[in-house]
Length: 406
Image (cartoon, rainbow, N blue to C red; front, side, top):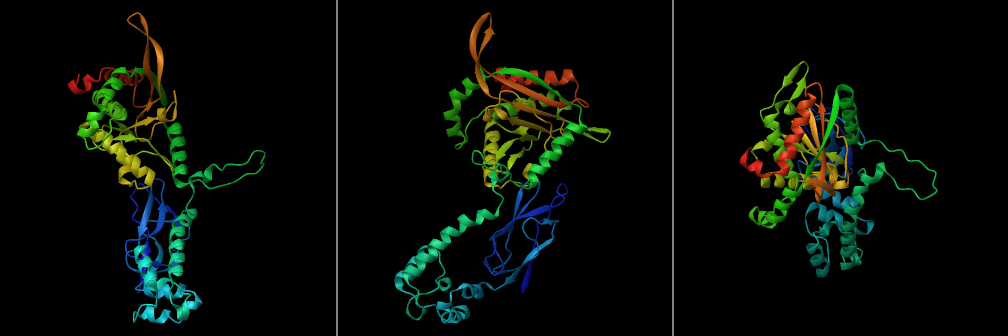
């Protein structure tokens, strides 16, 4: 019986997807819950798993094709897995294959070959025997193990390589390479142009003395990690806490425009920009105003791992009322971040540099960071934006305020 392989049900915010990689080809045996095909959307890569054991049948949507929600991608012939192995066997094993396919008896194999196959998860019936009478030898299993190890290395070649958009050419080469944009990159480009076209976007700057935060982190980072099951204390949690406190005081910065209405949010869903092989993604910390420093750091660490593994879900990247991005991790000293619609503002962190500062009439060296707040001037006045950024600066320079709520 043929079972349809369907694309996932996309949320309303995702119109369609693109078939990125088929991990199986027609005739390949598949197992239930095994990864068959990747669907790339403008947010994440979705994995489509097999719903039954069998053999992959016809492929309806090839790599690069656009697919809609719940559209048929191909089919699985249920119960065909056992027949697939003899079909792939070499002619030398043809005599032994029917018996293995019917399940009447195992193929003839040397004890050493069987043991090696079991240790490496190889189905002995799928190994082509080259010994006398089609007997499976240890050398046959060694070859099968080598082929199995080589297969995963070859599979990623089907997927778009992260470096494909920026190939490396030898000096003196006058060649060009044209590659299609990934859906993520195309969507980012679209939204950035949309933001600049539809918003009255301005950026205000300030600088923050990181002395107190760095001292607090240095003093308690080891104890913090031990007390919170290995969660490390970083700088981002302080910025998230400061931002949520400032958003309480300036609700317009946490608002959005919907047509001719202003929507004020009674919660702070903070998007934290995370770098991945596919580009910059922005998972969201829900109700960050209720989270502790450890919960924030734990959430960010989880997002970072999922981003590197390509495991972020659409739900984790949808929504958000305010965004924080840290260009300082890449050495940026100053930049003007672009607001992510329909949000009204975004905070940009930058590199921390030791600089001479005048403190109480004395020149001292302090760890300083430039802050940038880009905002939609249709919703946020200049005075409000500046005061909001100064509030974050004051909270970070005296982090005790975050605990005392002052």
